[in-house]
Image (tube, rainbow over all chains, first blue to last red; front, side, top):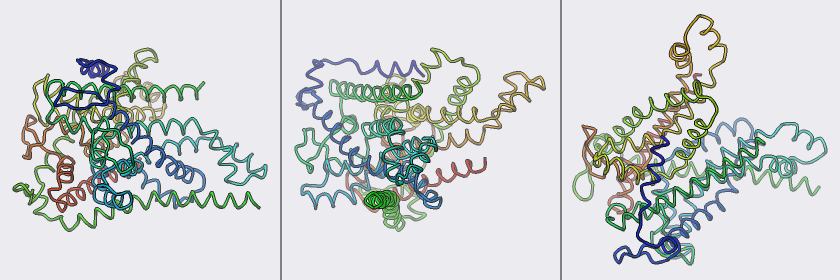
Length: 258
Length: 271
C-alpha cells in the first residue's frame, strides 16, 4: 500500500516549466504551451474559503444542537439526515446546483449563474456532514462535570455552551473544520458542474472560476503531451495539500493526547 | 434578565440551524423524487440509450455501475480484512505500524480526482488494461480501502477479550482463534464496513471517469469499458442533452444509495 502510494507520488514530477512560474504565473493557454496554474490555486482557495465560511457556522450549530439540546426524537431524525447528506454522490449535488441554484444565483447576482457564489453554496452543503459529525463527537466527549459545575454556578445553558463546552471541545472542532476543508479542496464533480470553469482569477461573485480539481477533470479527456504532464503536476499539488492537512490533523490529535 | 434572553435567542438559533439542515436534505430529495419519478419505468431501467438525445433507458450504465462496485468490493475485501487482522492481532506498535497508519490516513484524504489520475497513469497505461471495468474497479478499491480497513479494525477490536481467553484455554492456536472465533464474531460490523465502502464507490464519478471509460455498452468481461450512472448523469446534465433522463438517473442513484444506507443500518442494529 505504501509502495503504491510512493509510486503514486513519483509519477507526475516531470515538467519542463520553471517551478515558480508554474505555481505563480497566471497564463493558462495549453494550445500555446503556457502552463501556469496560479488562477486554479486561487480558485480552489476562494471556493474552499467561501464554502467554509457559509458551511461551518451551520454545521457547528447543528453539532451543538445534536450534542447538547436536542430531545431524543429530534436526534433520531437529524442524525440520520446528516449521515444521508454525507452519502449523496457529488454528481447529484452538482446536478441539484445546476437545476435549482444556478437560476436563483443568476437572478440575484446577474450573469449566467455558473459562478463562485453557486459553488460556495453547493460545497457548503457538502462539507456540512463532515464538520457536524466530528464536532458533535468532540462536544459530546467533554466531561459532564464541566457542564454541571457551570450550571450550578448559575450560568444559563447558552453561557455554559459558549464559555465552557466549546473551548473544551475546540481542538476536536478545529480537526473537524480541517477535514471539511480537505473535502472541499478535493471535491471535483460538484464544482466542475456549477463553477463555470473559466481559467482566470475571478473578480466578483458572479464570475466563473476553475479549481485545481475541476480543470484536471475537464482537460484530461483530451490533453496530451506537456498539457497532460501539467495536469499530473496539478494532481501532485493537490496531493501535497491533502497530505499537509492530514499532518495538521495528526498534530492536533497528538497534542490532545499529550 | 438579559442573559436569560440571550440564552433563549441562542437556543432558538440552534434549533433553526438544525432544522435548516433537515430542510435542505428534504428539498434535495423531494425535488429529485418528484421530478425523477415520472421518468422512471421498466423501459427506462431495462433498455439502452438511443440516438444523440439519449432517449430510451439507462440499462448499460446500471450494469456498469454494479459491475464496477461489486468488483471493487471483491478486490478490496481480502486486502482490507487481511491488513486489519495484521494491524490488530500481529503487529507491534512501532515504526512499521505508524507508517501503515499514516499511509491509510493519507490515502483516505486523497481527492478522488487524484485517484482517477493515478488509475489512468498506472492501470490504464502502464499495466495496459485500457479503459476497463478492471482498471476502474482497482482504482475504486484503492479509494475505499482505508474506509473498509478502519471499519474492520474497529470490528475486531470490539470483540470481547474473554472470547480470546476461552479459545486459547481450549488449546486453539492464534490463527484458529482468529479464523473460528474472532472473524465470525466481528462479521456483522465488517460487512457494514464493506457496504459503506461500496456505497462510496457507487456514487463516485471522478475516479472512474478516466479509468472505466465513457463508452455506453453492457460490460461482460472485466476488460470491457463502460459508463457508470454517475458519469452518465454528469454528461447529461452538463451537456444539456436531456434533463428528463438526468432526473430519472439521479432518482435511481438516490434510491440505490438509500438502499445501501438502510442495509448498513440494519446490520448495525442487529448487533
